[in-house]
Image 1: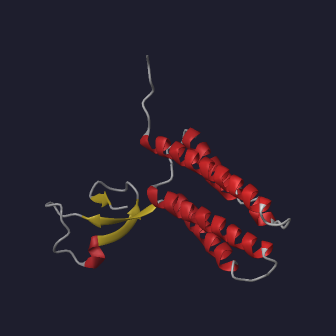
Image 2 (image 1 turned 30 degrees about the horizontal axis):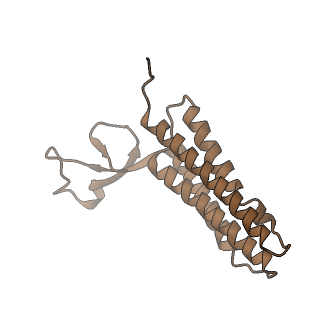
Image 3 (image 1 turned 45 degrees about the vertical axis):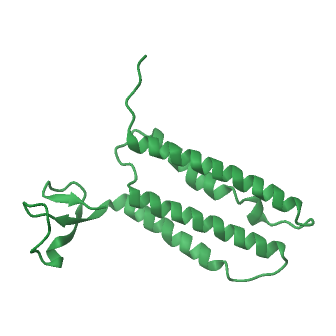
Length: 166
């Protein structure tokens, strides 16, 4: 039997896709149950609660895991993107509960703004691919260097003198 070697990042992205698929299923079931007991009231935000995790979580993770590009998102980009999806989902849930209760508030605007900023930050980090690195001495420590020299911003993989910190 022949098996292809697995890339750790693609396995991680497939696991992320499965996680977002299960989350989308949970949100869909939660919406159905909540609407069942909401006395006939509904909210489009509750009906579409599954969409952020499905369209912004599962679909990009599957596409990136099957893509043959070398530019897969790093850990920081994935964490920022996941935080943006979580913020958007919570904002939709808060808005739906407020709509179903028959009130209106601007309280949920912070969720939309925060998730938008997080999405833009993740996209910017993905395309710039800059990392904060520390310069090492020959002993492997940063002792004796000023803080300005210890932490420098450079492009990933620019020189072998630098060690990746992120």
